[in-house]
Image (cartoon, rainbow over all chains, first blue to last red; front, top):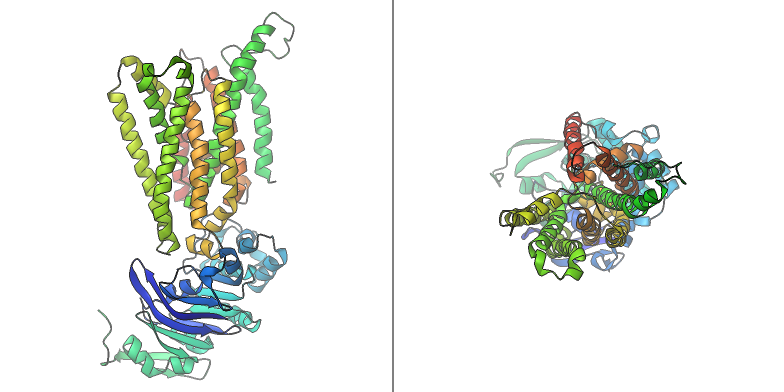
Length: 255
Length: 335
């Protein structure tokens, strides 16, 4: 169990996450959504133990993350940053093997399983500079999987991908969740959250304003309140599309 | 053990005997009983061997430090000089020329390296002071910790450089002036076993400290946040870097003066032979740095010039065109 308890985070002296409490479910996909600057990425960093809380705590199996040695924390929580940074022109299999760093072993089986899960076997010798955007995203996710974490925390993993690659990556997240791992993703695209997340956390200006099943947390009322747009959902369950129209008079978007 | 270690170890093993034979006086290895044999033995034991050992030590330190710095800054253009330790060591050495006559004769031979080491140590202490402040930012997730720290190192470098320039313009006498200027352009001329004794333990310790940082540098390949999520302790890594680079570069400057470009160039020679992860570069870069400095020092000895070309100048003459080539290559995308 990974849980935020009255969690408040500051970055650069500014409160970016304010009193968030949420228990995350293993074996499910949780999406964190909200407008730009709502504190989604900061909350994810906090959940990964990479920002120390100003108030409250993040608990992993009942222990505060700050009390867990970094390496032990890293074995339990895998974090995928938004920026797909690869500093050196390293071959795919060596990049994925970096995921074993928290374990200080070669973990050949885990690396092989991660390569297989993301269909990277044929690219294993390819250097990073010759990967496409979609391949790069898969390699970096495979790095996280190679660490066999109980929790996978990913910041906008789908943002740079075309539709087909988005769906393929989501399928990987789903199979992780089915295998019992907890998956937490920050998403910008509300339709992706609506269609694929088991639970959704809605953030607005650092506060948690809604949490629950996607259909409740992303109801048109909530979208109007948080994003300041009039919107409605079309289509069937699992394949819904969001249609947004004129700004809602209730709350004009911030200038 | 990777391929690069083997390649550069073999190269070094081939270079050492060549370097011992080469010089103003060439030594004939087959003339063991001839009239020149006694002289040759003296030249070997007292001049060429310590010089070769020193070239290996200084080069190894610079190579390893360069590989670690490039890994730490995730930048192929990084150089061990960026932390400002070499200019601080040079400033300490320049101070010894200034003190000149004030130093008791018994200490005279030791004053330069010891003051240079004091300078390097002061630089490391300043960096540590700054590190205490910037690494807490990094741990807070504010980012920019590494960039901020490097900027601080550059400021220390330019401060030390300015003070060195000041010392030159205010030199007490023309003799001191020419000694300072000569010394700043690093060289291994007329070095003895004393310098080897000073530098060897420090450089070896420094390389060992950098080797401890190797896996953390690998983690940084994926960026600071990903590295921390894999258990990297940024404060520990920063300390290892400051101590490791401080020892290798500080000791190198203390015995040989400023030798540029080795730390920058060597990791690029090594990288294509490895998997390109920083941890695979540190040991082979130490060996390759040793090869480069040993070869360059042998060449400056052999060149038919009236006065020996300074090693620091020679390496910069090789290094600058290489750097330009590197920039052109980088524009094409792959490094």
